Amino acid sequence: MRLLLTSDTHVPARARRLPEALLAAVDEAEAVIHAGDWTDEATLDLLESRSRRLIGVYGNNDGPALRRRLPEVARAELGGLRFAVVHETGPAAGRERRCAERFPDVDVLVFGHSHIPWDSTAPGGLRLLNPGSPTDRRRQPHHTYLTLTVVDGALRDTTLHRLPPR
Picture (cartoon, rainbow, N blue to C red):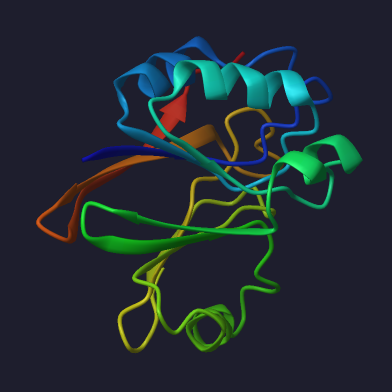
């Protein structure tokens, strides 16, 4: 199962639209996970219309309309793995321990907020993934998103994609 992970799209504040490379990857994915901070409903509508399956949450910059349509935490089983999605996980220090305690029944936690790509494994095996942002790199050298494959209940081919400068 091919998955695409994105977060912190911040359209239209940080970009007028999503990058074409990201949209092409959405078309190839069997499921798309968005970890919040959409900031506009049009982006949610676009990804709903292009995704075979969309799993998303709201972030701290998402207003009432998005919060009515999206949960704070989403859960899904994908390819035999238990995923949870949340926008914020707090500071980097202690993140693995906190998240493992908060999500003891999950194999993979996808989060956003920092705009900083993250890939780590907590003691006990919880995998934490942050795809960064395809539109607002902040202090990072590139705009990014993640793709991965789930095969027989295991993550494979986790790839951080760097988008060309706009």
